[in-house]
Image (cartoon, rainbow, N blue to C red; front, side, top):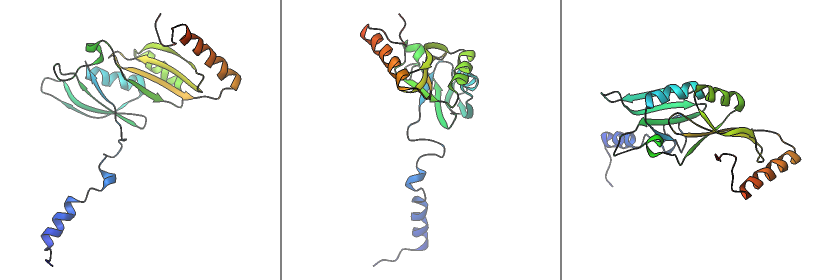
Length: 180
């Protein structure tokens, strides 16, 4: 049996010093949203004003475009960059977004007013929904859709009335978040 020398043992230890639990950076979850934005610098200011986001880091190119930025909203990290035509496109360039960022809040009405006051447009007014949440949808000035909610207590009668109203809307081809 061949003996390992000290240098080989140290080298092996260094290579394996990152454990499986350390492979995800501290503060990140398994899934982290990454937004492509036409005007990422302005979006950073908007997210600070609308959602109380904290800037964690920004890497810019010589022309000032944002290559990569990280922000924290509550306990969640959001990453973003400017769009780079031919490589990435923002919802404003595409004309729509297929993703909704969902934010749970302890005081959704306060967060709602803050976001609307910062310039978000209402897509679906905030209201108590039949699934037991106070919920509404907004679109930010950069084309990204956000739903804001918190759990609320409702009686069975209230939930059933809300559920029936929603089902009636769907039956007639409408939806609370659809412009007629």
